[in-house]
Image 1 (cartoon, rainbow, N blue to C red):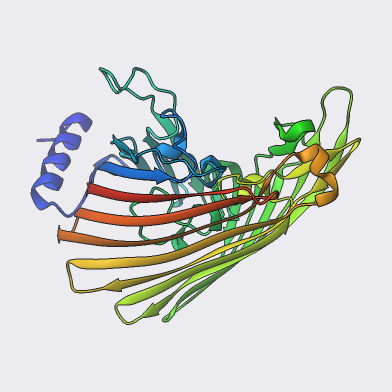
Image 2: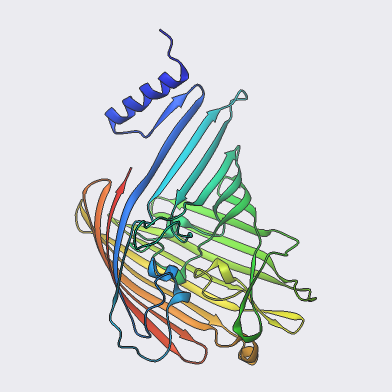
Length: 386
């Protein structure tokens, strides 16, 4: 008896469920895969200068620019609980007539998206696209992690990002080509510019895409990645037409230490802006008819120790430092001068895909004027990957 495509899919799904070693099915020459996880986060956050509004994204996960600064505030810690990090992905892999394979992937979650309801009753949130791309013969077309970012260097943390101020962290539309250890990309341009009074203007007027180049070295001891970025910062509003070249270099990797590992990243550049620290600093300051790019240095180091087959911990330090032009403070206001955070966690996986964890994070932010603030956060999470 010949199965129809729908029956073939159903039969494959049943076999996958019984075997518990695969997540997918096959229809003709196309293999279907799916995955994701469900995650609950509960957090107590104590801010020295008072908590940001409950609608702030910094209440869902650590975002350095949202950390409040100013006089000490004796307000109590705030408690937040959400499942917004939960995600789902779906992919295909199709063998073509020419013997080559085309793959697709789409992934959704609910973080940093507009609520479709409220926390009083429905706790509804809109899904958002994380990844949506096609890959074929070394080429990638669509939205995914920037080629300037090394996702493999991110340490295991309960916080959504972990080393937020110290890492390159960008997803965007791009065209990327990979050959051997090298990869090159043209990516969607966007500029964040400081205007009079310290306000941020987001502009999308660049005439060229952002360009990246990356080299990955893999060895028995781990891996090492070097990436370069070149882009055009622009401001074309109110009759002005200003632009400035931005560039940066990032080195990152992972070193195996027996069952443990050490992960790291160091990034330096001119006008990196949104590419580092979740946009903790802007790309440039508008000075009359010119753009003055902001230099920055950022990085992190993380050590993961495995206590045994079920218990493990990550110890993390992350930092960001901006070299603001103090001659332009009358224009730029009081920008972020530095940010840093420390964290330590303990994770327990009674079975491979189920993890319970606790994490303590201390974070600090200081403005160019010296005004500062800090946050202490205790986070508990439960995560099941499928």
